[in-house]
Structure formats: C-alpha cells, structure tokens
Amino acid sequence: MVGWNCTRNPSELLKEINEDGKIIQEIALKPNEDKDYSQAFLFIEKDNLQIIKIILYDNNGGKTEYSINKFLTDVPVK
Image (cartoon, rainbow, N blue to C red; front, side, top):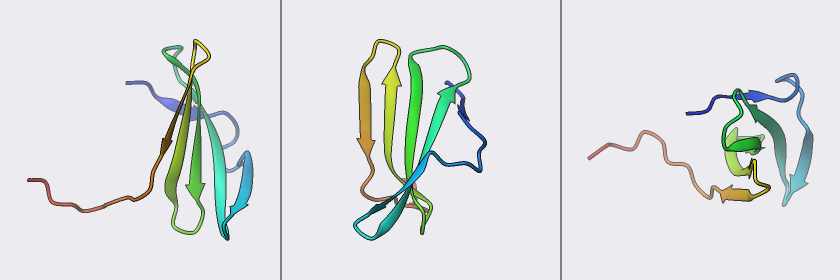
C-alpha cells in the first residue's frame, strides 16, 4: 500500500470550483515512495466533505479517473 502526502501545505487547496451551485475543492497528493503512481488529485464537495472524484496519474503517463456518485456509511456487513 502506498502512502500519500499533500504536495503543498494541507491547509492550501489548489483551487475551488463552483460546479452546479456546489463548491468543489481540489487537492493534489504525491506518493511517499516512487511506486506505480506519480500523482493523485482529490475533488471534495466542500459542504459535506465527501470525495466526488479521484484522478490518478501513473508513471507511464496513464490516467485513471474514479467518479463517486454516492457514499454509504454505517452499512452492516453481512
């Protein structure tokens, strides 16, 4: 498992975007060790502090994007 660190001061955001009336914050992360990924970007909805998108860049120039539509919490494990 790779650990990640903010590329800047954790209290500094890369930018805030107003998207459909929602404020989205963008945070850049770098891996603690040189592994498969070179950088990640988290997009967080400011009002409810939920991650809505993750973009990962691998060392070969590839890009993987995850869009998160819904978070479920406290779901019982069966």
